[in-house]
Image 1 (cartoon, protein in one colour):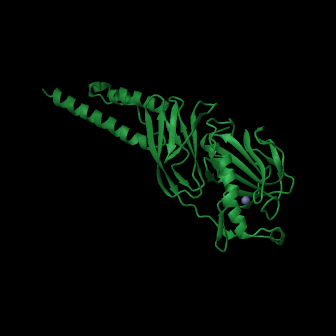
Image 2 (cartoon, rainbow, N blue to C red):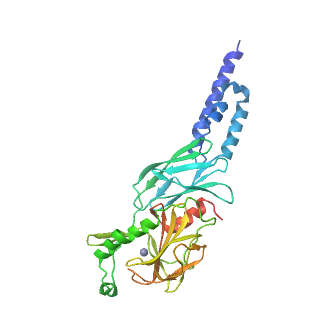
Image 3 (cartoon, rainbow, N blue to C red):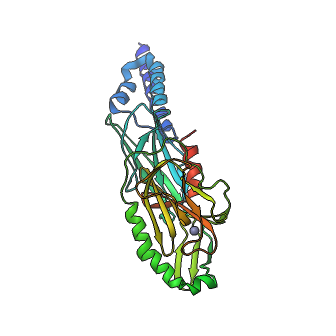
Length: 332
Ligand SMILES: [Zn+2]
């Protein structure tokens, strides 16, 4: 007589506990959506006294299958690293309207996707979507915050002026010609990672002379500095930050002697103002391989390396990129 209501109470409590666990677990970095078939089995009231055991088995499924973010709160210029467990093969991924290519991390079999938050990306919340080959999907979101960038004068030296450089023609030439050529060179996406190791610095000694993101003004002309300027004596070796293929090796009026390296997955590293270029377009390069030497060709006040990183046309902070990718993907 009393057994039936008690059984109902036990069943209702078991279902409530399982539902609560399911509600709270997926918000964290361990979040995932279980395939529908598993979810139905796990909450079946027939489980009765075996409910705890069933919940335990659900937890072991959670441990095997996960999606991890390097951070869900990012600043303009940051690189987001998304890692998915080896358990399920990633088919496609996207942040907002941009596709994210995933590659299988050779050391652990984990799936890694990199997304670049452009310096000019509109602050706000963006959806993240991952589709797995088994038909299941994962959805979450990230927020992008404004980063305050310094403002400075677009400087010139008497020597540069004598050679015909003016703030107006520097800005016009970069925006209308040089950026277009670089954009064309990096438009092709190699849908595989050409690297297996962490990214490294392009110079042995890193001394920042000009910050990423600085807005350089002169009258109505304005340029945002989408790389970092590294101080180094003329002739210093400039090294590839990782394995890849040379997509561009040429001279520009403002960017000077320039090398662009494709690392796959839409990731490109750029090296500007070189004194000399030591590689040819199409050549394969290894991490640490010498691409050329530090110089002051083009619009440069003194010898330095301008170093940039692009991920599918997003200009990211190159120094944060090296650090955030190594840490987020746990590359060793
Ligand atoms: Zn620069």
